[in-house]
Amino acid sequence: MRAIAISAFGARPELVELPEPTPGPGELLVRLRAAAYNPIDTKIASGAVKGLQPRFPLVMGQDGAGVVEAVGDEVTAYRPGDEVYGRFADPARGLGSYAEYAVVAQDGPVARTPKGLLPAQAAAVPTASATACALLDAAGLAEGQTVLIVGATGGVGQAAAQLAALRRAYVIATAAPDAEELMRELGANETVDHTKGDVPGQVRAAWPDGVDAVFDLVTPSGEVDAMAGVLRPGGVICSVVHALDPDALARRGLRGVNVINRVAPDVLTRLAELIDGGELRVRVESLVPLERAPAVLGDIAASHARGKTVITI
Ligand SMILES: NC(=O)c1ccc[n+]([C@@H]2O[C@H](COP(=O)([O-])OP(=O)(O)OC[C@H]3O[C@@H](n4cnc5c(N)ncnc54)[C@H](OP(=O)(O)O)[C@@H]3O)[C@@H](O)[C@H]2O)c1
Image 1 (cartoon, rainbow, N blue to C red):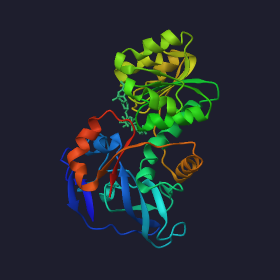
Image 2 (tube, protein in one colour):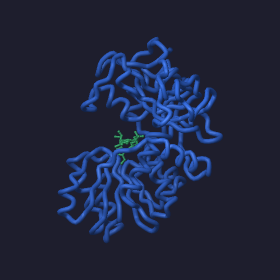
Image 3 (spheres, rainbow, N blue to C red):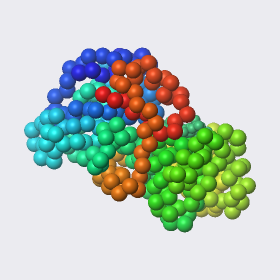
């Protein structure tokens, strides 16, 4: 099968020919039609994710969508021909989603593709939208509360803004001028231009009593304390880049949660329902054919995301 793989941490991703994987008991062999880029893909490839001991060559990528090609023994939940989407990374076997084939356990991070979604759209959903769900849950965001989303214009942020608006929260989204209209279409009530600098100062000026919650998708640990300064007493800040010291925040009378997403069948099925119901939109910003991916991955990682980049297979 054709795949984009690395031969070692830090090596250049390459288009390679690899053996097609075989599904074990309880596993599905999926013919992938699309894979989505997530920032974690390049972090893993660089070796920045501690404790990961993959088999090389390691196929890059997590998220994907395609069709069940074959099933292993004891599979009862799916049949060949079923359209599925989810997370298809198995680094211990050198497998990932930037490939023609992947395997996933039938009770693993996989579900039926939302109705009417093309594989390229479905592949864009799992990690970003599941992370947005995890943020809302961690914060316990409730109707009428105010939430600042920092890094709102990317994959996670767009989903978080929509889900927060669906919960009838008041959404303040960071957005460069080119993305203000997009964020309002996705449910933001107001935007803050982070390219002008001092986001905490801008938000405090508009909300002197503080906001109820912050979803921070980008601010590193050295700077996140200032972001927490926009919260009202007792407010909650959630970081997806593990920037928070919850004990230090508790001493300031604030709650801090370093959020790790959970991509599981129940979450994927819930997301599929929201998409089918027209309540969650996932914006695919660009499509890249598999063979072009090695040449453009660096540019994608450095780009100002306004949606998801999807690799077509
Ligand atoms: N913990 C978890 O489970 C988990 C799960 C998923 C993702 N993540 C992490 O979450 C982060 C975001 O992921 P993503 O998929 O949403 O990334 P993405 O699609 O690349 O989007 C990042 C967005 O952040 C904006 N941005 C960058 N710097 C900013 C700043 N200082 N202030 C405001 N906005 C800023 C960018 O727009 P501009 O360039 O215009 O500023 C871009 O739209 C990544 O680091 C990823 O690894 C963690």
